[in-house]
Length: 415
Ligand SMILES: [Zn+2]
Image 1 (cartoon, helix red, strand yellow):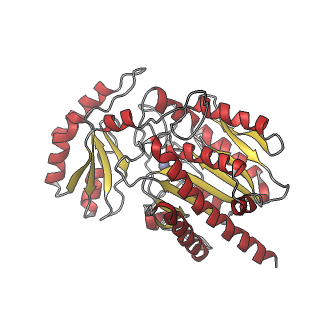
Image 2: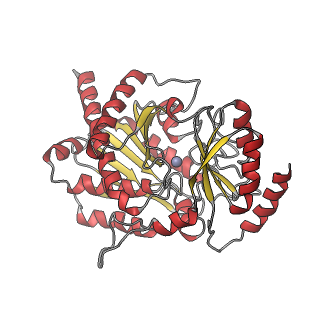
Image 3: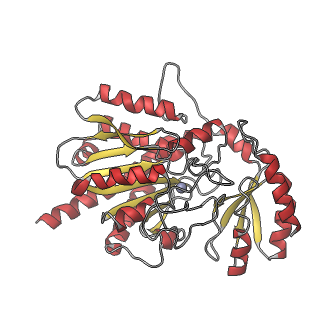
């Protein structure tokens, strides 16, 4: 009980608005829960957002979880682990050092690129500029809005009317900066590739790409707290819900929290968040041409498909397993990066209320995939910017593999 009192005290100290939150000497521990009792003990930490934050949730026995702990809390945290017989290793020694080192380089006169991370304003500026550079194929498109009134801005790339539509989404979790960076790299690649085989594949689809599904959260990660995850809807006593637990399909049933302040708080009701509600309406409006949904998160190096539920299995599970097996082979072939793959619930954990599950479960789309991009925890979501391009290249290899398999399936269903 003592550590609880310490947590409450420390939490009140950390929450100072308008200053940038610092993570000096915050450590990340990789913990190994070996039983349900140990899982429950770790989960009880989740309420204390600022001092103890899960980088990877402890949800499954014998699967490691990553827990970030403030310097003030480390002693009592380790005592708690010891009392409960939980093994742990220090995985990141100083989180602030990773934050200080993640940014990359910007060349003079370059307004956008992939050797550094970019602000929401810069990303939106670049997206809007594309319709001037490629007026015949690119149209800026607003897919929804945020609590604070920002646009969920994307681009529509149309090569030929009636092509199957691919929706690409990144940044639903605010702090996972590699997602938006990868999404913009892919837009650029689709528009500029000189590889005729790549061009042949991408031109048989139309794309809607939304790099930042959670614009308020993304802005907040730049201005105030680099490790912010959710929306910025004001709840009491904490801000925000997890927009990837908020979609209206088996909402709140498994792998989501009903506790405000918890990092995976599912919201007070399905589609309580402006972002998920408006973007789901946009997705529903795309109709039958919409066939493929690709979603970027980090980290963990996993390629997955629905469902994040024990109670429901994808009707085309076997097909999706074959498609992801081939896609991961293509991904690994470039730089040797190792991915695990399978359904969400088999590969990572149950996570009811994700966009992915809703797109398959409610809209009935069959080709629905999510990446947990680089890395495996050395940097977590604080991935150094010099990994943006190699990460994007290998990811795009896996996307091309998926798109070619989708084309083959569409053709065979027509013949
Ligand atoms: Zn995520």
